[in-house]
Length: 288
Image 1 (tube, helix red, strand yellow):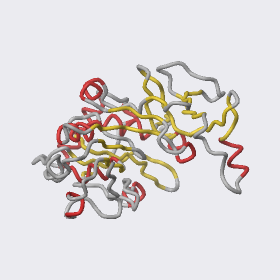
Image 2 (cartoon, rainbow, N blue to C red):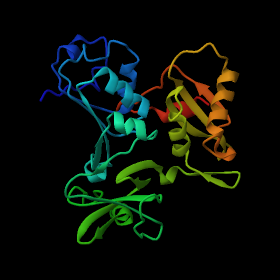
Image 3 (cartoon, one colour):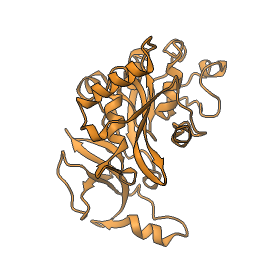
Image 4 (cartoon, rainbow, N blue to C red):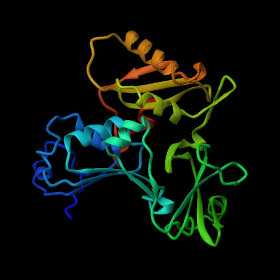
C-alpha cells in the first residue's frame, strides 16, 4: 500500500504527488476540497488511488460526491473519533446510495471491539433518533491525561468493566449509523434560545449552491450578539452579495427557525487552513 503524506507538500503543482503511486489518501476534508478546486485533481492524476480516508472535520456531502465522481474506482470513507480514543473509532463508506439518502453524512458504525453510544445529561443511554453526548468505550480509549488527574476524572470513567470517554460531542444514531452534530461546548444563547452553530452549518452544507460553510458567533462586549456565516459557493455567479444573502436566508428559513438564521453572510473563494489542514476558524472569526 502506497501512502503519500500531503499535509506538508501541498496539493497540486507538485509532480511528486502524481508520480507517487499512492493508493491511500488520508487528510482532512478541507484539504481535499482545496484540491478539488482544480479540475486536474482526478483519477488521471492519481491512477492508483483506491481509498480516501477522512477524519478531523465534517465531511460535506458535496465534497464526497465530487470525489466519487472523479475517482470512480476509489472508495471514500468518513471516519470519526477523538485523539483520546485513538482517532478513527467509527467509519462508513460513502457511496452513491449514502449520498442519495443523507444530506448530512453519517460517520458510521463502531470498529470491532469498541462501543459507541449516546447519553443524556444524566448519563442514561438514549435510543435512536435522540440527540445527546457521544461516549466511546473499549480498548482504544486512553487511560487519561498525563499529569492532569482533574481533567481525567471529569471525562474518563469505567463502563461495564471497560474504559470509557465522554467526548463532549453531540450526536445521535439513525438507521444504525452515528451522526456527529457538533460540540456541546460550542452552544450559544441568542435572544434566549440555545443554538448549536454546527446545526446551522450542516443545513447550509445541505444546500446545492453551498460547497463549504463555517458559522461563528459575532461577539460584542464579550457576548454573542448574532451569527455570521462564511460560505464558499459551489460555482461562480453574477448575482450580487445582497441577492446571494437573501437567497440563502430564504432556503435556510425552510429548514431552520428564524432565530437560527445567520444575520451576516461572508462569501469567500476559499477558506484559510491551519498547519494541520483544517479550516482556520479562529482566523475567519477575527476577520469579522
